[in-house]
Image (cartoon, rainbow, N blue to C red; front, side, top):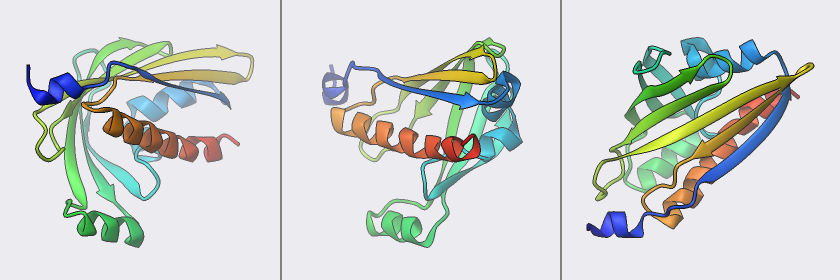
Length: 163
């Protein structure tokens, strides 16, 4: 067993949000180019979608791009690129109920490539949509914590949209 897999956390990260919105609108944020680009990426980053085929087995390819002067400077200071391509696929699709995106994690220096899932369950009641996001743990507890902070940061974009 490699050191990376030995240190990989097994705990899932669960983040819940409820929005005053139509379920179709929240679903489209995950499954359309315009929707995905409108909110994906933590504060200081944006996504530029190259391909989105929102069906089971369909590809999701995008570039994660630092887009504020502060984040660009921080990435350069850490010796990291200010943009990196990301490859994923939709591995489960139940329209307006559930989707699973399997990401290929191949952009972390000195860490072997692995896959990580994002599971999103949607439900609606009246004029509200509940979204439960479950993230697989990353290769270490420290990176899993950073993943949770980053995902929570990007959800603030949706929080503001639906406030």
